[in-house]
Image 1 (cartoon, rainbow, N blue to C red):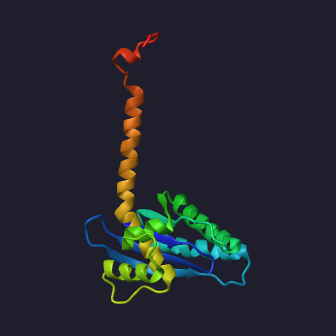
Image 2: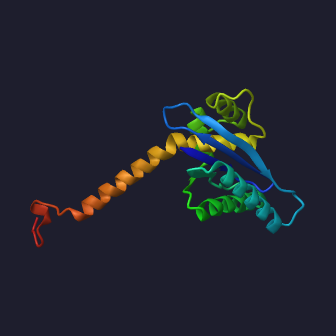
Length: 189
């Protein structure tokens, strides 16, 4: 599986592509950052993020795009920019028919380091180790994007299979008639 991880942001939108499967060695296929000037109008910045992400999608042709789920912060302006960049990433992938999944920051940290409270330095060190890189990926946005991709490869497939199994079981339960004394209409039990 080839996953494009996106750590959304307006000034720096981290992108990283990882190939692999659970239980097998992972390989980094690309890492970088889509940058926009802080003094540009919001529409122009979103257009630049879109163009950058489209270029990554063209070059790497991922099977899936994993985007960091936006969470509430104290700075509303930062949250808005992150949410807008996240929406652009989801739109670019969906337009191409590429599935999109969202992962929370704590979910990503737990998948990569074993602790949902790990700091950026710990995440970066584990990404470097897991991908057998000579140097840590920089900036932190790029390392976070790789961590998102790793998280999805390791957890996403399992989560998707569990969800599909639960849905199949629920469907089977709805379509199978219940037998026994409790299924008879008008029973006085």
